[in-house]
Length: 257
Image 1 (cartoon, rainbow, N blue to C red):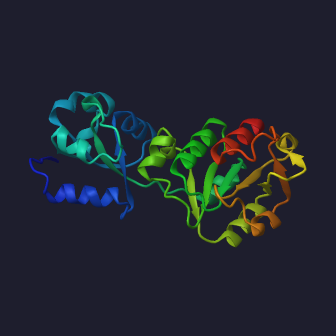
Image 2: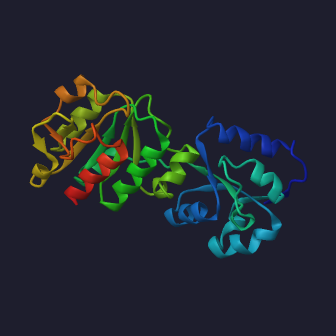
C-alpha cells in the first residue's frame, strides 16, 4: 500500500508524532543507515515514510519495501519530524515504524552468555554505548531495572548504532524473580564498586556472569551489592574519582572477552 502526504496535518503524520513520543509498542527509525541495520536484523517494519525522490535508495537497501505500507512525504516535512538537533542530509531522509522485538529470557539464559544488568540507568548515550559494546564483546543481552531509560528512545538507537535491533534487551520488573532465574541457570552475580578490593582481571575464570551496574549519579544500591557473589572494581589513576558508566561496562566486557 502506498500513500502520498501533501500537508502537515494528515492523520498519518499525527500518528507518527505519537510514536515519537513513545506511546505505543512501536519505535521510530531515523535515517538510511539505521534503517539498513533494522532490515539486516529482520525486525518487523510496519510503515516507511520517504520522499519519492529517495525511492531508489530505499529499493537498494530493502528490495521488499512494497510489503510494508509506504507513505510518501516531502523531505522538508520528514526533516521537521526528525528528533536530531542537526539537519539530516536529504539522501538520508527516511522515517520508519517498527515493532519492538520480544525476547525470551529463558532461551537466553540457556546459552549461558554473560549478561549486563543496569539499575535505573538514565542517560540514553550511555545505554546505547553499553548495548553496542555488549554486542561487540559477545555478551548475551542487557537487562534494565524499572525507572530506566527506554531502550528504543531515538537517542539510544543512534548511540547504539542500531545494535539495539539485534541484541536482546529486557526490562526486569521483578528483580527477585530475575535473581532466582539466573541462579537456577548457574550464573554468578558480580557488582561493581570503586572501593572494592578485587579487580575485573579476577573475573577470567568465572562464567556465566550477571554484571550489575548502578545509576550514573547514585551508583549501585546497597540491596544489589548485598545480593552479589563478588564485588569488583576497575583499577585506574586516582586523578579521577570514577569512570563513566558506559566506559566502565565496556572495559569489563573487553576484559572478559
